Image (cartoon, rainbow, N blue to C red; front, side, top):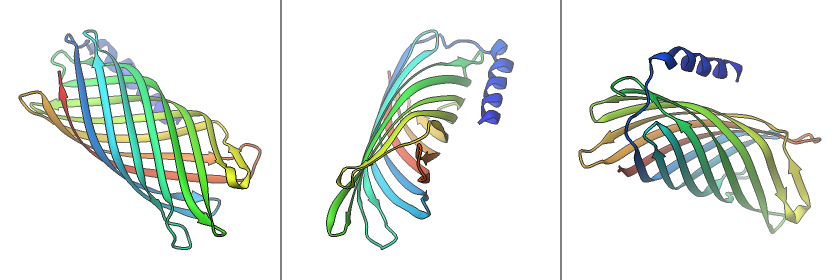
Length: 239
């Protein structure tokens, strides 16, 4: 975490004097489909999930390079238990972030620090002891990151480094009277993307991200780690 923060600050401080602000305002809107693989461990038991679902996103960029963007994702799939049984899993994520683009004189190289708020909710339905049991999870975190972008004619390549401070996370099983809160801690995420911009302002984009989250029960003994690999194909338009 400290290494990530120092590298991000160093880049901004070094590059700042030679970067300019974008001089045009623009918007972009897109929709996509994500395929997600979840691995990890929960109190000694392996996690194995396969999910997919749609994603919708929007970004507004002012003439001075300030941005506000929002995205929503809905996912559905299953987790495989150690017994071989599969659960029915559904989740939703909503995020809003603000940032600022800086760029070189021709804006082929850009960098954007940002900060936002991210809300995640999920429901995992499984059968145990002959009954259906729902495991609910809610998480609220503050994502902070730096996005780098490089343009080549109609192509754009980008990388995104992010830290998220989870200041509220809860998992509960109403049927069993279980209600667990997690310790506040950091999560990490790394993403790379490639975009092709058509002459009519439409674009297609492929993006891969890898995120890691830990759940350490507050005043309890439960520990879990989750690694999420996500591939997203999107289509959108700039205007």
